[in-house]
Image 1 (cartoon, rainbow, N blue to C red):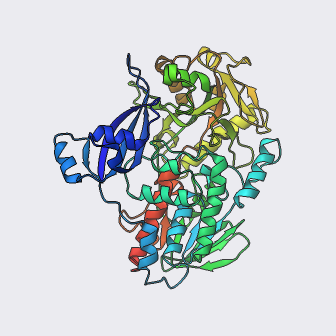
Image 2: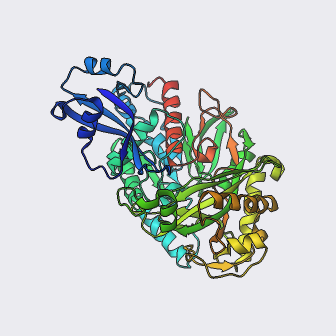
Image 3: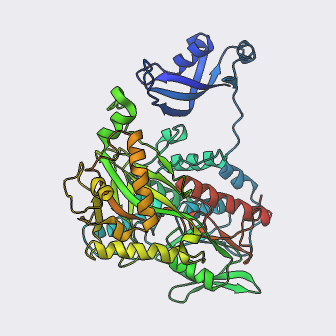
Length: 539
């Protein structure tokens, strides 16, 4: 096949990919057997006379002699032979299994990292046993809905804990830095489980929380079909060691499960588990993370700012943005994070007496409101540098937000104008804040670290210069966002992927401090399982 890269196609162009490929290669349309879209990104750079375009990569199969076609374009770096596709890692595991572990491997946590670790282990015939402290995704959805309507918080089943992990109640974004080939295997697994085909080629793929709930159920069904087992409402309260190595886990309630390999995919909010690991002597270290607020605008305004006259074009969908700011005096950065087009701000607490925000959107991204986190970097020295210091830091400001807004899980909100001007009380927002159970106008300085508030004040006008209206006085800011990533890292060997202090313990994903987002966590869980399978000689 022939690969065409850097192909610019106006959004208004409705021709087939075969027609477009034939024109680019100067060959007859009839000779093109197929043109597969490998990647599609939106190029919305505002240049005079240039429409909004798709920037594409196509793999083309043609009846013409491909060697001759390539020879004609030998000086064109954007046309080359398409690379051969590697077989699926899951297919290879199913074919190559031969050496099984003596005991069933245990996976703790059923978010993206735990799910893909378990899927790989099951495909290799290892019959993994998964323990998830929260409930299955349907029971979880019901518990979260009750909480958002003013009900009580379930500290084990919420936006952070339960089947699918925190990403299941987000935008379902599958973007990740780098080009790890395992990303393709993760995307294919999601598609087989019911995700839309387009995630294979979109530069910024997303599934949406509504579709993701069905996808995670189907992945669970595949793990069960392959011999694995998933137990919900099963919180691991201790790891069991003998002679310095893992020998199993103990569940809340006292049940002990024997295992030679335990995969820790606990998520970034499993604070009680962090404390247990720390007290057990597992090697851990403090790490940087970020905190801040959620900002909301009308999606129409963001679309106009990004797409100009093409705003509202259904072929483009809802626009997103990515903004960064660097304080030259302090070296501290601020940036937008987890931008959710056409979504809502959600209550994401997992501990009683604390307020936490996050962002979520459905597949259609059609709420009419855009939201994103605006975060500021927090360094270990900001909280004393202790392993558990970051957790204490997060808890302090989450509790302050809870008290500030009335102690009933409503969230503090402040307009950009009030925040920049040092006043409070405005209620006339450009869009109604979407956070439920509700918001209370407050001074965000009372629930943010001073250096975070100061950096956000410096960053907002800069962001406003990049997107017109972004820092308008009536734009709402809702606090606090404290769970962007893990505040500590469970240290593991770079090649073996197990704990440097506790052989047989395999930390993985966001909770271990090695990932940030659904895709990177899934890839990390998969890599961790493959490292174990190599160790026991299965692959």
